Image (cartoon, rainbow, N blue to C red):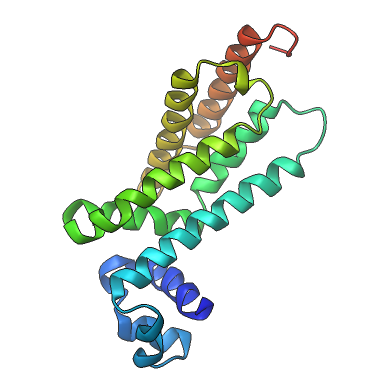
Length: 192
């Protein structure tokens, strides 16, 4: 059923939540509605599976990006750049689309709510790939990571209306500097 999930992600990305009908998704997947509904009884089941897959793919991109980061660069800078760049992907546009649609679609919000908690947990787990984060107060660490996610998601959403590359780059530099200083304060052995 990977083809149906892939088609759902692509359809939401191109047509939005409301344009992603079962008929359109099945057409793009090259599958009958009967075949798809045997695995995903409702459109909402399929969309929830697609949202989970988006989160999984985003996590894989971040993790592989951290592993492939060139030496000599600040891990905080690498992580923030990966986070910011990840919010600008077509995958993340699907996530944002679903979040916006959930605002006015209670059944979608009910299905995605528990998934958001899982995604935040995964995001926090990935953030621990940055050396020194284990020395931060856990509540402050959670607040910081989720605030940065929301900051860059907001930036990604507003970029569709107005791009401000100089502000966006400076925002990344300042956030990286602040994170590096916070980590250095938590562990004086780290570069600040």
